Amino acid sequence: MRLLPFSSPVDFEHCVACDTPGEGHWFVFRGDQLLVEMGPLERPSDDLRVRARPAWAHVPLQKNHNWLGSTPVRRLYLGVLDGTQCWLAELPAEAEAPGGMSWQGLRTLFSVLEDAHFALAGRALQLIDWDRNHQFCGRCGTPTEAKREERVRVCPACKLSAYPRLAPAVMALVKKEKQILLARSPHFPPGMFSALAGFVEPGESLEQCLAREVAEEVGVQISNTRYFASQPWPFPHSLMIAFVCDWKSGEIKPQAGEIEAANWFEVLQLPKLPSKISIARRLIDAVVEEVKSGTDV
Ligand SMILES: [Zn+2]
Image (cartoon, rainbow, N blue to C red; front, side):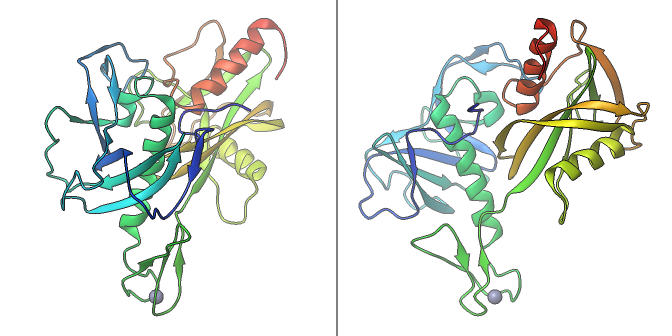
């Protein structure tokens, strides 16, 4: 099983309530920025969106459960990592970092924070987003209440339940002999290409979504779809499900407004690619490796 960035750590137990708050790791956010202790920004980055990464960084480990005082907008229990409690908190948008700490985006902290902490930071960011967006019932407007035994907010008036939401999205790397199809959307950093991706529509299977997205975005028909891996993606709440497939028919025709450019690329002549933080890069690397070594995916 491939354990990609943001996947749940193996020694983590998810919990909703804690009877005896004690020493814990704290995942504290201000907007989408995490509170960390860190060294100077001097490590190179493989992410075109990140200029440099810190030499080292870690999330605060605190003995005193109330170390943030009354500043948090919300505070939730995440669970237990290897015997240590894990908590999340959100501070107001204007909150200053406590002495010796600073705010950093998760992309900057990838490969710097310990893997397990990085994954839990992603989980915390999604739960903050969910908790913030479901303070009131979406059906009748009544303030909702958190349940102690389950990760859900319930409306006391009409009983509507709001669970953390996930948006499944498929990703397709299309192969044609020794070439792969890569495309760029207008909001990518300059020069970067990636695999095709899109959100699953209600009433659609993953395979159907894949065929539709590829046809819509580049006008190509596919066959022989093979599952690759999946990845939680907390920006804000996606689950990426990646596949490899073969070209069946059609010429590349980029979809206006969505796809700025799309091409077949030889595996020895690739453009700039996404960071290893993403399943897109893991998928591209795996297929490129297989094409180069002559084995087939
Ligand atoms: Zn309601």
